[in-house]
Amino acid sequence: MLYELSQAVTGQLERAALAEAIYRQLVRVLDAPSAAIVAYDETRHEIEVVLSARDGVVQAEETGRRYPFGVGLLSRTIERRQPIRVDDYVEACRREGVTPLDAQQPHPYWLGRR
Image 1 (spheres, rainbow, N blue to C red):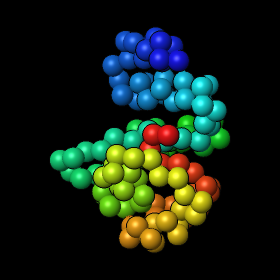
Image 2: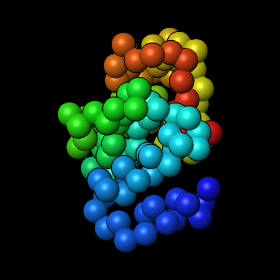
Image 3: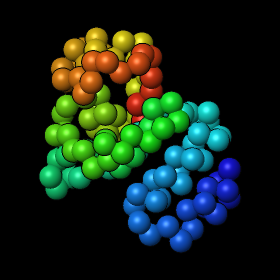
Image 4: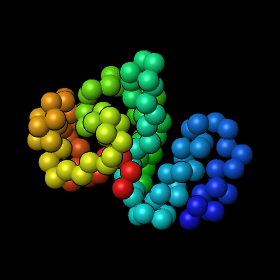
């Protein structure tokens, strides 16, 4: 898998194209048609959506969207550098003291690397 991923991303200089190549490999290998690739901007304390996909369809309107650090469970994933798996996203946000990004997200799901 790593060899195939390296082949897919070799020569990809544009971040959007690189994210797309990584996503396509994730779908193929992990069967993860719904996923997001984000970048954390430490200087601005923001999380930027580089790529978001639902059911295999890239959500172009999400690309470039920025969220302040501390909103959503992804902030906790970044802080802890560990994945979080939840059965109820909204309840997990309440327990963690963060505002949910989108209360309509499908449940359960993982945040971070698995």
